[in-house]
Image (cartoon, rainbow, N blue to C red; front, side, top):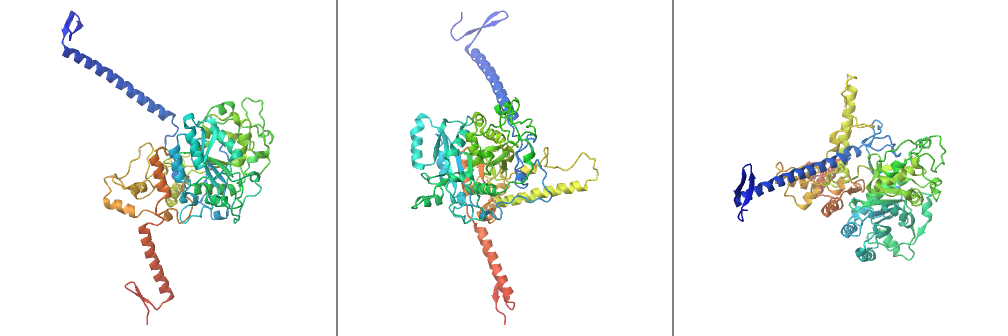
Length: 618
């Protein structure tokens, strides 16, 4: 035994007596060894986690959004199963194609579409719901467009409601109070979930209970006729504060008009910022457009195997024999073939109601879940088809795509994709992320992409060695490769956390720095002086110039808004700002004076100009 404060150390010759300091050193060394081992294990665990995330994450390269804004989509056919998910431009465009421009010249002659937008929320999401109510659900720039707007006529049939599952017990009263106050919450008869059937429950509810205002004006050259779902009507409901002004005026009249089923039912996430006038405009054009003629009637309907239905790979296998009967919509005995059984209501097989599946097409497989829509006929079929009721669990946006391929007229469903004007928040750092986008910048983007294509075509035509393995790039075809410049952003960099280009920017300047292509977004720390910051701010574009003098044609939705600050940034960038800046107004006045002088000189040839003063000649 040894005295307190001492320990025995076993040696080759026996025991030595160690002092307290030696003991402390041993304990310290031991603790250091353990900590080092833990650090190594932790580092290995973190590295392994990030490696697995990288391997499992299908999004490894930023997408060629500049090409999306320049090269139009040439088909609305359901994407074939053989199409690689990485094919950004799988079809070869015609020579000298025209980049997309929106809206079309005859847009104002088209009657507005009836749009029911269901925003998925949860019981605790009151702060985000309030933010939406006070911004894009009601703001004039969202509902009317840029400039003087249209007085809200375009979105006079656009309704927003928040979609919740059953709230938890301790939230029931708070949610009920919110319903009584705002009249814009729908509670579905399902427990709250994301991929456990909430979307199917929503569409099922919407097929019978989604109503939108009627067409308040018939002063349009084109109004869809013969739509079966417009025969059903319902008295106007209690109105929300953000419902269309036309609906509020009509409700206050002595004889309010009944509401009708919508042309489109859309599902949106509450982390998306949606510009309602832009959304309605794109849906309006799709509603009025005549389906492009194609030989789909002679093509077999794509089918799904049991394995396809049970997982989320969305890899489709052998289609039906093309000789099968057009009206064979029942399950066969083949274990690898599954076709939609007859719906309870046979109308999808008989009417001419539009069949439209709209959204951002992801990997040539499905419309992204942040915002996608279905024409009413598809919603009604989803609600009534018995087979679909058994296919409600799994990634909800992928499930919806599977439903579309099971439709009895699947080959006629129009897959209308919009990949330019739907994107992720500039701070998100995802493959879908870039700066806030406006039509003026897209015109510049289109010019650059067309130059790339023309340059590539010129290289191909002047290539002498046809056998050379080195050729100019081609973004087209199933295995086309887009140039890296088509993914470039002046604001966002994939995989890197966003930081302001200059540290001491004002709030307004920091919002301008998030605008794609702006001078402010191009400034960099260490290379920009206060003078260049001031120049970039004063020479920013006003809203009228950013929209090329038009009311519409810009961002539809910004997604992946994970922070309230990001939401407010989107609101400021898209809803606020001057129509004409001070510098633009000054230039406009100078141009106006020069124009007046030119007109006077032309109409009075005997006048002369002396020191900018027009003097009558003798």
